[in-house]
Length: 223
Image 1: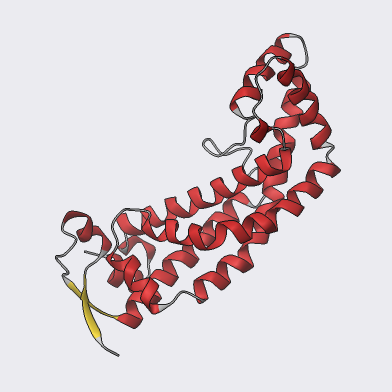
Image 2: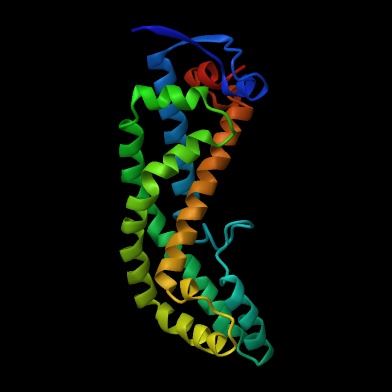
């Protein structure tokens, strides 16, 4: 296998063409696959459980902007419990959908070509790997999530709850068309949260490859 001079991602951010480490194409590909697999696994484990979204300080799914404004009005009129129940149900639906991502994410990691891996190793940005991952999986994962979210919303009567709030908000001119479909909204937010978590794991690997305990990740992503 032809060997090419490549540099760890940390030093590329400072000098993209100063390739200080010598890695084989196989090592580069294996390192990127390992980083993707680690990030995907951590994201699914963290979000695909009870409270994964609802208790997260950043990823908790709130009502979309215009509905959130309307919800404040509803709370002011004594309907706060209904609004809180709606927000909880949305987060539960997302938490139930995320575990379905595991198989597709793993398949995508295994299918990563050497050419793609080399491009990612040479790439810039602290989330280059995650952005590539998202470009390959977001559409098929959205199709996978949607029926799960739909089933969860039906079971929790979430659509009725959301529509009740949306109907009142629409009367105030606060709802956009894209916010009227609860299944689509929760699916988008679930995917956003999933890739955010994968990206955070990638940043950890880049910042401290030694701390991962993986000799391969240290070799590929270290200085």
